[in-house]
Length: 317
Image (tube, rainbow, N blue to C red):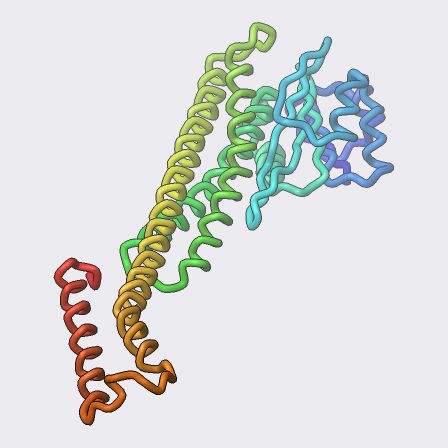
């Protein structure tokens, strides 16, 4: 779907003008949104006099967030995030003095919110394309917070579980690694976006009003906060993973210790049983009247003494 929004010189908003009329009509600014376009609609991006590389970046490649300058327009490659699972989706924004063109293969409610605001709010309509540009960026970045906070809450819940006894370590470890994977995907979007806004704020080719400068600085601060949240959550998952591994190793060691104690106690008993299990005819002890009870008593005595000695050494702790 291709939709257009235009603001005339006489302060009127006009929606769904044909692309051919955008250049002919006397407009203060216009916004064209390629919202999940078909292949045929996507080719209409070439209707505008954009640099071929900018058009190619929009049509054919999943790009990292970046900034590209051209003669009369600037290309911003942005990322929106889809949750459950965390997947980055490209949003291309081409901005000039009198126009904004957005191109994205997936629908995003953040873009729809800005669209409705520009269509219905007369105050922001007069702010023009500069407002549309930074407002779209602001909405996309703000949409990262619920995802980061949800992952942070899941990490906190896992951390609480480590304080209680639990048996299914395998399930918990799987959840830890699933969260770490999503945090990594989130990190792969937030870091390049932060670098992008650092370039925007320090660019000598982009001219901003004082208000726009404050807005872009605020977006950069949000990305810094998101970076801190993600890194903190990753550190917590690393600690939880190490705790789980320590618990698992401790349990394995306890089991091995118990088996070792049992085996050690039965070694001399097996030795005695082995001797008297031999079928030699001339064994002096075979003729003892009470030999069977004596040997059983000896074996019980040895087993008891060894058990008490191991307990004193702390092997049963």
